[in-house]
Image (cartoon, rainbow, N blue to C red; front, side, top):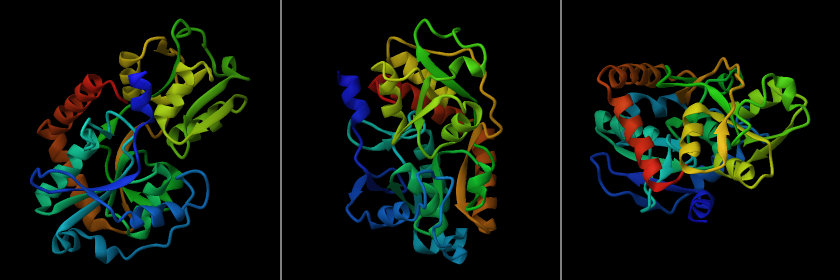
Length: 296
């Protein structure tokens, strides 16, 4: 029951973090997140109609002059972003955010909003960057630009334990119910590759997994790393051996279209964090913390 309660936790809020490791404080002004969310023109984050912001306000120089880096995310996707027992947003993505802010010499503000508001937040200029386990899909590329990959991984299906080898081809899931989070690359893959299955779209991945745990669906489409976390923390579920084809199999940072200044800076820093082993270090720390807390 404690794990179920943990899955259902998570109020949408904006958090500000001091750039040099200060204690997180709650930002009571969530209007930025509300505006970003309202800019979504459909139920998915891949189709947006947010007004284009001013690129000049989000260059590296502009961020340093402002003294604050604003990053949009959704804290419901362990080990990439989630909340610890004190309500702080932690995980791989927040570690990258903090390192970027430190290197820029500015404070970090995290906009914790619904996932379908993350792309519009960057597009409209409410946020400088989106770091939210975001894949560079063709639809999203119409709205924002992306950095190089900072994480590479595939997609899998979570299934009831004992059913790991039950599905050997896509058609085996015809008529089955597959849950996932709406507005994600997983929704796109589900609708494209499993046209004869019923798509059960939920606001967050934890809710989708709870549908499987409760026996209300046959499978959950999710990234491989998160799937491994769920299997570690919940009895009765496993990972299907069925292969999922995905062109966009990694995560990038999203930035406003045409913001080459910030894009080049991000690519440089991502390459640096990969080379010095920081990405791997932060990822291990995030997965260990998620396992210790028993949350995803």
